[in-house]
Length: 482
Image (cartoon, rainbow, N blue to C red; front, side):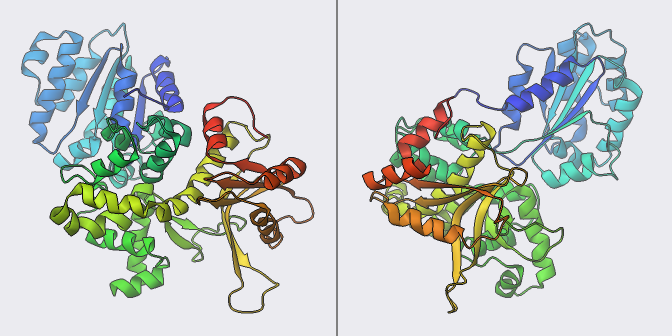
C-alpha cells in the first residue's frame, strides 16, 4: 500500500537531516499510527540504521545494534562482533569522519528502558560527550506514551531537552485516511472510516477487501488483530487493562461522568480520574463541553466520550460478540452487524462531519476557517418542562473572525427537506456566543441527498449542502466549495 500523508512529519525529519548541527528527534504516539513506516520512509536512500528494540537481554540488543552500525560504517570488527559497551559504541561513531550524515533510528525505545533502567542516562552521556558535535542524527521512537513522556520528555529525565525536535504522531487526516480504504465505492470507504478513523494500520490490514462486507468479515475473523486490539494498545500504558476496558464500555453506553463510572466500578472517583487520564493520553477518550464554552484547566464540568472510532466499534460489536464469533463464525456475525450498521453509522456520521469540517478549514475550502470544532448542547428557553435540552450535531467557530457554522447530520434513506434546516436555525438561536457580531453559516450533511425545495433554499440563503457526492468531491478537489 502506498505511503500517504505525513508531509509535516517528513518535513521535520528533513530539517533535522539537513541541519548543520547534530539532530536528536523524538517520535511518539500510540500503536498503529505508522511511526515505523514514517521512519523507514525517511531512511530510504539515506545513510541510516534502523533498529527495533525489544524486551530481550540488553547486552544482546547492544551487540545487534552495534553490528548494524558497523556494517553501515564499514567497521569490520564492529560489524562482525558488535560491542557490549554503550560508551565504546558512541566513541567508535564519534571517531569516524562522517562525510554523509549518519541516521540512527531506534524504534520502540521504551523496550530498551524496560530492559535496562539506566538507558536514559547512558544515552544522555553518549549524546553529550560523543554525538552532539558530530554529523549524526539520532531518532528515538516509542508507542508507550507514558514511558516516552517519563523517560525522554519529562523534566526529571536525563534526556530532557536534549532533543532538537519532537514529533507526536496523530491519526491521519480524513482525506488521506479515506483514500487508504480498499473499496472503490465511496460509501464503502466512508463506512470503513467510521470504524477505523485515521489509523493507517487498519487499512493496510484490510487492503485486499473489495467492499465493505469483506472489511467487516475480516474484522471478525478469529485470526485477525482486531479482537484484542484495544487491550494491546492499553498494555503499552498499564499492566492490568481490565478496568480500562470496562471504563471504555461504560462511556460507550452513556455512562460518561467520573462519579457515574465510579459508582459502576465501586471505586473512588479520584481513582477513576487516574484511569481516565491515561485513556485521554492515548487518545481513546476525550472530555467534551459545549463548543462555545471556554475550557478551564482542571474543570470538573464536561462529559467523557469515546474519541477513537475503533474503540467505539469494539465496544458495540466485538466485545459483546466474542462468544457468538466462536460458535457461529465471522460470516454470521459480520452479516448481523451489517444489518444494524446504520445505527452505528448515524453516530459516526456526526463525528465524520467534524473531521470533514476540520479538513475544509485547513484547506480553506469554505472561504473561512475555524479555531474550534465540536458540538453544542444547552437549554431551550421556549420549553418550560424538564425536556428542554437541545443539541446541535456539529458547531465550528472562529474566535477571531466571529464566524460560526451550525451543522446537522442525517444518515437516513430519505432526502432531507427544509424542515431540518429551519429546525437547525431555530436551535442556533439558542446558542449564546457573540450574538450581536457573529457571522452565521449553516451546513447539512445527508447520506441520501436533498429535496429540490431544499436545494433552492440553499442557493438563496447560502447553505452548505453535503451529500455523499459533494463530500467525495470536496475530499478530492482543490477548488473551493460554496
